Length: 182
Image (cartoon, rainbow, N blue to C red):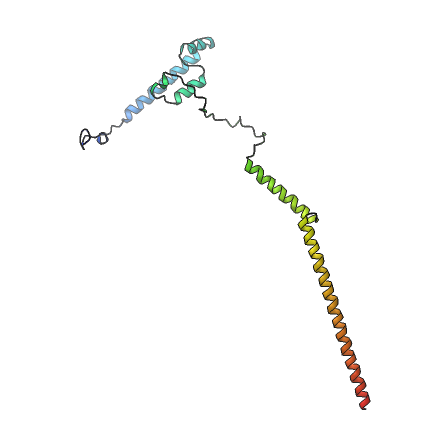
């Protein structure tokens, strides 16, 4: 059985809440402290400011102060300064710093997609001009089909003429027969 039994666990403790008065007092104290710091900065000269920064341990620049205050240090991290070459600090860029004139670098997939589209357009132009192997084969097949259709039309026309000649000959023979009977 764990220490303290079922009822004595750490999860069953009462929660304590900060009263609104205490929160207001903390906010006022924070505002006063910031005002006091701003007045000190404005009152000091540039030379005095440099001397004050030299006295502070571990303050190389204002940027490092901002980073240190925004990131909470754990364990001995505050005592030992560690520089990890693999750690990349995220730096946010302002809109004014971003250059819109600079061409955006395309990824390999985007480049390949654009090249594929251009190649397809080039092929279609050459195909329409009749310069590709497939276009030449299509045109040759089309010429053969046209020739076959022309031959079929001529054959049909010849059959039609032959039929008309047979009909005319039959009509003439009937006319001769009908004359001989009279």
